[in-house]
Amino acid sequence: MLQESERRRLPSQHEHPEPSGSAIDTAESSPKRRAHFLHGPYPATHFGPKACILPNPTSVMHIQDPASQRLTWNKPPVNVLVIRKIRDESLVEPFKELCRFLVEEKQMMVYVERRVVDDTSLSKDEAFGSIRNQLCTFREGYDDISDCIDLIICLGGDGTLLYASSLFQGSVPPVMAFHLGSLGFLTPFKFESYKTEVAKVFEGNAAITLRSRLKVKVVKDMLQRTSLQPYSQEPQQQQQQEVLNEVVVDRGPSSYLSNVDLYLDGRLITSVQGDGVIVSTPTGSTAYAAAAGASMIHPNVPAIMVTPICPHSLSFRPIVVPAGVELMITLSPDARNTAWVSFDGRKRQEIHHGDCIKITTSCYPVPSICCHDLVYDWFESLAQCLHWNVRKRQTVGCREKACFSY
Image 1: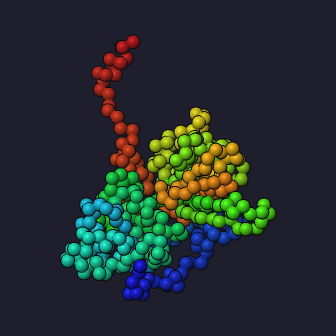
Image 2: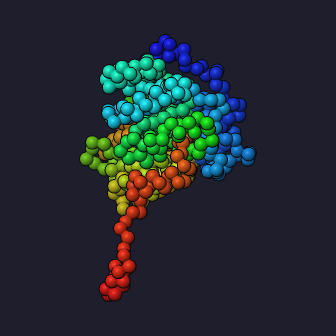
Image 3: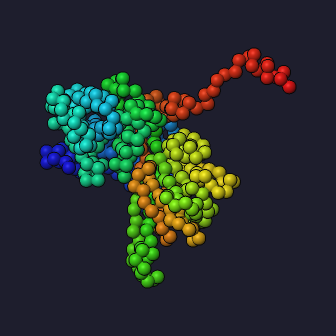
């Protein structure tokens, strides 16, 4: 829990007022005022209290221009959230080095998770004690830091960026991710040059990728649960999540195939019979969806991917739909068993008859800071992490021999 001295450091919402007419206001207003972004909701262009995209000279940006995706600061950043991969001793020294740099050289207010500070390797280090005492701590699910973080720095693999996204269910501050984990598809920065790279970000004008998220609502059928009268006005229970990679609906522990119905903007499109279905963002296209046979899509493409998991019908192939549609998944009336849903691999729960899962593109993307630019970074990740299109080249002799082998 935040200490009393730390609470005084938390800036109030009034210290960082949102500019009037911002994209956040537009996105959450009535449907008549809602701006669209390539058939999807126009993304919020203010990230946390102080970061935003450089103003676009055009009136409405219908097509996302990569050249315009440059980070700028309304005010100098002060509060930095550092997220470290837990249970990885190799990250202890980089974490201490980064915190010391941010606190002593950059005079930043550094926020870290309580369980990170309580690590025995940090508590026993007397040399780090002075820095440790200046860190602001929080606990996930207990302390809300969404209104006071200016910048997020991740140390680890792709899971650290997914975790950072889950902490901010609304506007997300810019995220700078260092590759210190096992995969690193979403972490373009090398830690060896962290001082130079972090200083550049503080100066602003860095390239960013707006990684779209999914807004997911799970609506529980209270009439089914409590055996109420059919015409009762008992409100339905709703749970909402912001998802960066994917929503997975599967059969769970049941031995039967899952059988769910897929709706698009209220119309039944198809029934999915198999091990389940994956609804993913372009960022998630290189994760579970790629393993299930989906195409890899650049995160700048406004789209939602629907990928069946081992479908019973072999003609059901992965599909891509516009970002602005609303998908809904329910159990088919003749389904033998329930289904299970998870959000970026977390908060798994059971889905019964009468429940529904509503999915659409969120107006709050994750602004991921690029190391080079949003095109080069993505293809470099494909080459390094997935060894994309890598094969042993044939020699000239092999080609000639193949030609005359007939």
